[in-house]
Length: 199
Image (tube, rainbow, N blue to C red; front, side):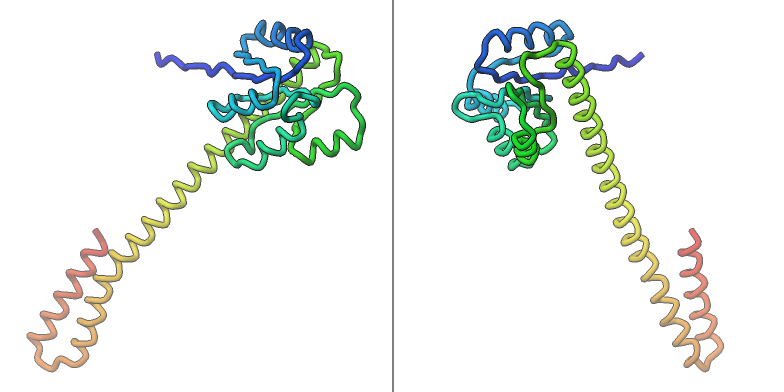
């Protein structure tokens, strides 16, 4: 029986508030996720550049590079366009949430963080990320199949053109041929080409 290797999701948490970070780390590690934690936006970005995670949870007001700016920078890079980004907000205001959403945030969590809500949002984000990955793989497979189909049509077209051209020339010559032995030879050529196409 073949064994299936399960992927353990990696989640990056960037929050300058150590107690808030500790709550998230404790509850997410208890679910078996691999967690890396950061106090600054620059450190988070370096880690993403070194090895992209499955999901990022980032505080809105993180030093060096705030949460919405991190979203904007990551969304500008096609390598991270499907990375799921959750922003942590202290006082969510509609216009700020719209701004952050426009900059690329996928979801929001308000402080103080409720562990059950955190877990639901993380699982939802990971599920969406997996579905996007599956769709990308399926699209890649479809593109390969389309290319194979195009190659096969081009090959078949090329393979058909030669016998058809030989038959057309032979038929033209047959119309012009007056001697019976010449006609028989040309008919043999056409017959051979028809046989080639029938194989």
